[in-house]
Image 1 (cartoon, rainbow, N blue to C red):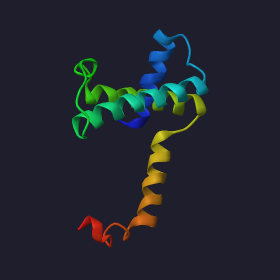
Image 2: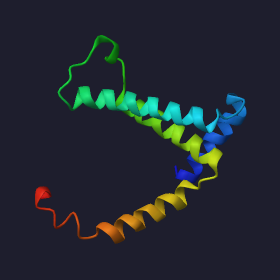
Image 3: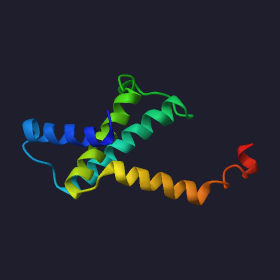
Image 4: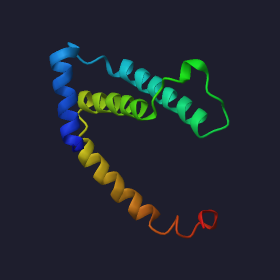
Length: 108
């Protein structure tokens, strides 16, 4: 699935089941919440924190998908074409960082 297809699928779902998009501000708050849930799982799985009983049923892939879902919603409702934006972002990073990481002694 492409980013364009994902944006379309989210838009179709919202139209069919979601009634309407939440406001941009509400979706930004939801995105922050979802990123926090993802961070919690990563902190417990890869960091030093131990799992709590309430965390045991959490799934890393599902939490990442929740973040992506809300990001796609925000892109749709603000008119952002994520395919174009991502291509432009890769180009920016390549131009800016093409040698930076290769020359970073910490990464060797």
